[in-house]
Image (cartoon, rainbow, N blue to C red; front, side, top):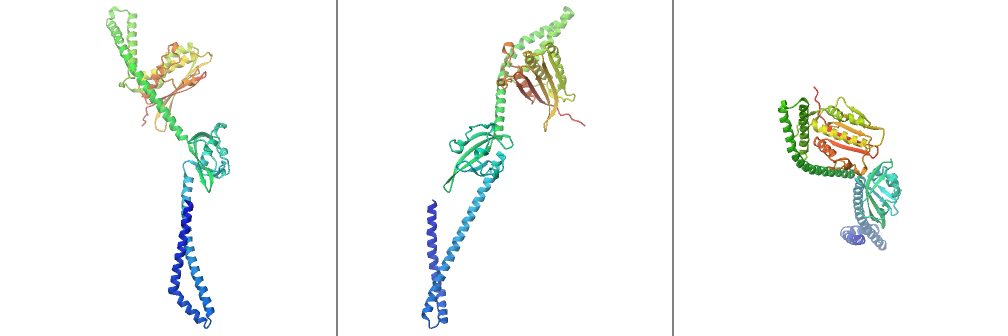
Length: 453
């Protein structure tokens, strides 16, 4: 294609020269020849040879010079136009190269960098001028000092598509990137175009997607356990109502009961009512029954819940520490459901401590007020230095029916119920644990924004 273009250009200028010569000769013959010949004859009378020589030489000189000037002028204008077009194209592609959102570098066939744009320098944290002349394998340092990462194969074209790497920048930070390469041929020289793309944002979106999928999976499991709970709850309600009603009939006839029997009847009614409330809470797994919400004093709920386990923890040799913010704001919720959450957490910590063979057992519960940029919340932490959770189980602890204590009576419902309650309040439950060293559960619940005059 390039040879054909040059041949057409040669033919064009040959034709232009012929046409221009013809036009100049025509103009000379019609307008200039006779006046010039007369001028020569006047100035060189009786010298026919001299007249002839002057007339021919000037005529040839005029025609050739005029043709040359016209052709060269047109040629220079054409060359100038082509140069401007080339400069504009070069500026356009240089601007694209310099302002590209991906890092770009051009290397020789032996992988030495000829040019690099600012984004490439930003990703490796080195100025583009400093990169010129360096080897690509020297400029891109793979995190962890991996010997084989496939980068050399990518440069040689042996790997097609993207190559995902974690590189170590000049400042020592690690950054995930993806690399692609392609060949560029210029003046019979093969160059390599390397494109580097920052993968940090994509990795964050992938993590968010994974968390969202896990939450959807968790919600689906909670829906399944809700349907099962609804069936069980309905079966329990009937005999439970009978027990409460029979106890109420006995209470309505106090003459037939002594004082101790009357106290036992009251206890049966109270405990039966408490079971009935738990059953109603189980029903919320299957349908969204209206929940009575009110201002809940978190510190008071924690204190009351701890009083149920204080003696048991003391007998187990556990040191208990509490750190409750005196200015802890209230939350909007149901005190019984929050107490159920706290009791589940304390019960799990007690079992983890009971399984640990150590003289130093610690359980700590703290509650603090905190704020994001817009919304206040209450942060509750439950810490124990018990047996901890295995790494392979950490993502399953909130799954319904998942338990590591099946032989000792664990049902796997406590944490899943806790997750459902806190999620319903718009909060989050997080867990961090190291096997053999302890566990921290962190609950964050939106608090009521107090209004001050």
